[in-house]
Image (cartoon, rainbow, N blue to C red; front, side):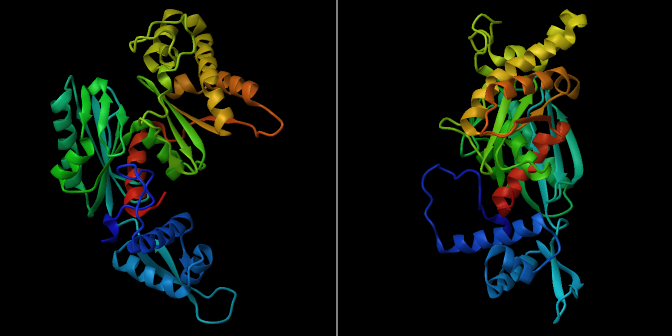
Length: 379
C-alpha cells in the first residue's frame, strides 16, 4: 500500500548506505506528485508533468494509483485560455487518512491529538502523568495513543511522537532523565503494541519539522525551544540534522559562563541555567523591577551561543519557541542584537530571529509532519 511506505525520510533506519531497489523510483515519483499537489492544489496532469519533469504517461499512471489509494481526487475541469479539451484538476484529499500525534515534552502531562493530513486537529486528549516514570510512563503513553486511535474517524496513517531526550535513528530513547527512560525502544514497542507505523523524534526536532511544514519555514532553519530546558532543532536542506550521537541541537548544556550558576549536569554556567523557563521566572521573581533586564541578559547569552552556529552554517532564519511573555520582547531583541553584531558581514544576509507562530502546538504538529514525511514523502 502507498500509505505504508517510507520515502524521503529525514532518517534512514540503521544509518548505513541505502540500497536502491526498483520500486524506490516509483515511490519517489509518487511522493513527488503528492508534494507538488501539497505545494499547489488544483493542478492538472499536464501541470504535474511540467513541474516534475515526468512524462504525461507516467503522471497519468501515478495519479491513477493515488486516486485508487484515496489520497488524490479529481476536483473539476477548467477550460483555461488554450484550445482543446478542458483540463481535469487534481487536489490532495485530506479527509481519508488520520494521523495520531503525541507530545511528551511537558512536565507531568501527555498531550495528543488526531489530525488530518493538512494538520487540522480533529480530536484532542490529555493524560496527567503525575509522578509516573519508567514503565508506568510508557504505559500511559501507550494508553493515550490507543485512546486517540480509537477516536479517529479515518484509517490511521501512522502515529508520531515528540519526546524529550536523545532519540536515535531507530526511534529509541537513549536517555530522557525526567521520564527515567534509558535505551527505551519506544518506536518499536509502540508499533508492535498498536499495530501501526510509529515514528519517534526528539521534541525539538519535531518542532522544527512543524515550522517547515505548517509555518512556511525555509529549508535551512534553526528552532530554539525554551521550556523546562533548552534545545534546538536544525534543518539543513530540508532535513533534520541529528549528529553522530543523535545529540545535535542540545545547546542547553553549552557553557556560556564558566563562573556561572551550577547546572544539574555538573558544569557551571550552562545556557540552560539562564534561559530555561524555571530559571527565567526565578530571576524575574527575585527582582521584579529589573525583570526586563534579566530577560535581556538571557537573550544576550542565547545570542552568544547561536552566533557560531549561524556563522558556520550560514543560517539567516532562527525561530524561538516558548512562552510569549518571556520570549517576545527584551529577550528576543537582545538575542537579535548580539547575533547581528557578531555575524554581520558584507557577504552574509541579515539574520532574522522571530517568535514561532505555532505556540504550544509545535511538537504535536511536528509529530504530524514526521509521519507525513516518512509515510508519504511529503515535507
